[in-house]
Amino acid sequence: MNQKINLKKMVLTALFTALTCVATILIKIEMPATHGYLNIGDCFVLLGAWVLGPIYGAFAGGVGSALADALGGYMHYVPGTLVIKALMAVIAALLFRVLSKKNTYLGQLIGGIAAELWMVLGYFIYAYLILGKGESAALSIPGNLLQGAVGIVAAIALVVALRESKTLDKVNSNG
Image (cartoon, rainbow, N blue to C red; front, top):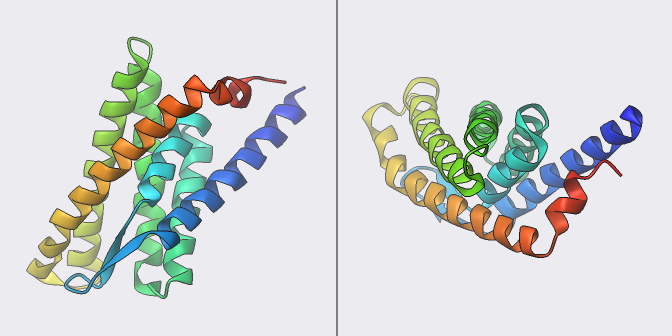
C-alpha cells in the first residue's frame, strides 16, 4: 500500500513539475527593464504545494520553474529560480497545513501571500547580490508583485473548480 501511495505522489509530482514548466513558458510577458518576464507558473507552484505538501511541492515548483528558465534562455536565473520557487512551495505548503485546520481557503490565501512575498524578496536579493544589478534590482518588484497576485487568484480559482468537480478528493484518496 505504501509503495502505491509513493508511486502516486511521484506521478503527481512529475505532473505538477510539467504543469509549472509549461504554464511558465506558455503565458509570459517579457520585461526588458528587468531582463526577465511575468508568467502564470506561480499558480501551479502554489497548487502543487497545497496538493503535494512541502517536499514534493518544492521539487515540482523549483524544478518546473527552473526548467522553464533554462528552456526559455534565462540561464542566469536558473539557480535562483530553483531555490526561490522551491522555498516558495515550502512556505505555501506549511502555512496551508497549519492554517487550513481552521479554514482551508484562509490557509491557501495566507500561505499564497507569504509564498509570493518571499518570491518578490527572493528575486530582489538574487538580482541585487548574485546578478550584481544593484539598486536596479528593485525594478523587478512591481512586476513580481503583479505576478504573485495573479498566481494566488488563479491558484485559488483552480482549487475551487477542482473541489467542485471532486477531482481533489480523487487526488487525495489513497486508492
